[in-house]
Image (cartoon, rainbow, N blue to C red; front, side, top):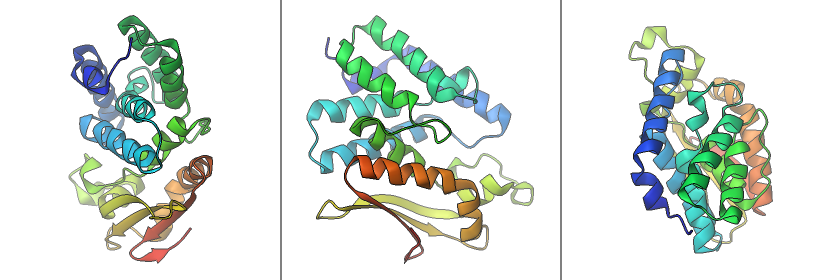
Length: 220
């Protein structure tokens, strides 16, 4: 059965898993991982594959993977990508998703985290780039600036973030505008270096070169 992103987005069980996963991360003090995050990831991943000329079905599948990629946080933050892949398999198999499509979605979800992830497919690569580029002030839950840790400071400092593929389809750039009164560029690299390395590998899978531009300066 051809399962669509709209069907997945409207599924009440999946909505519950997303909400409960974000609730668990809230207790642990992590940044927002709820609907704002997963929808942003879905849209950004779809932009990447659409711009590069991938099929409509691949775009649909990466949107589904983007929407469901963090449900494993309900089980545990550690190895949440693998937990999420197992959960997604059960959900999507029960909904009747075709085996080939299901394989692509769970492989992408299982490989999106920088600790263990590998961009094994274009869908996985697009998901990685979309997920790691969602850095923004509104993801910070802590409203006490004086009590910010480094993750809060870095995310809060980001005034805008955009992934952009150039017209010749050679580079994909994460454009960040940061307020360095909250966090320095060095602190960004301190917590995001591993993610940026994975983004480079993901871009290469898509035959692109990854670039990081902060306040108008190319740093990678």
